[in-house]
Image (tube, rainbow, N blue to C red; front, side, top):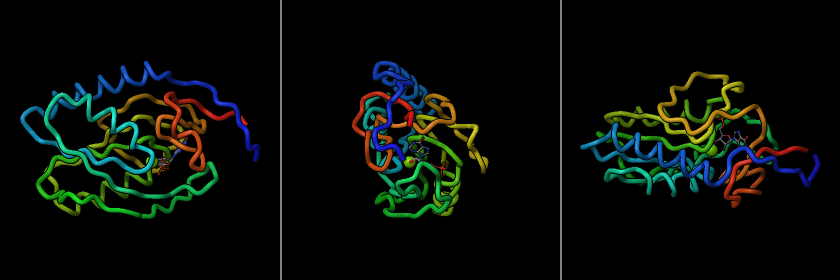
Length: 175
Ligand code: IMP
Ligand code: MG
């Protein structure tokens, strides 16, 4: 595979932050009077969660879970490996799973099932990007940042074999 792909911009830093602010405000309204627990899916959602936590207008907590499903290829392996669990107990909590991008849906389907077994009060999903064309299993996404075309995207925390996570904007790779 070409080692030096071109990156075509999809969303600028300003567009992303504007949308993240809107998502934070929505979450703040929906969870007013509650203390939701935002659980970011590592590593991809780390940058998103860092901005989202500052945009959510009500008190809340944050934790992380780490999974790995991709190797160095741009195709999902379908196998979701749990690398690290959240430290916070999910029982009785209003949990919001914060994900970078929903592709086949396998990762979130597995995480939602896993979380529900721990008897939280509620579990919802906040995904920055949604690639609906690629969906193989149904997942209910309550908050979506942007739909994206069926392209391999990078930046703002999202990587291609650990590359391009640091980009402040989001783009797709052209090989
Ligand atoms: P899913 O289980 O197929 O929905 O895959 C979800 C995970 O695959 C995401 O959390 C990302 O980490 C990764 N992923 C899916 N699409 C892309 C992409 O276009 N670029 C980079 N990572 C992706
Ligand atoms: Mg991810």
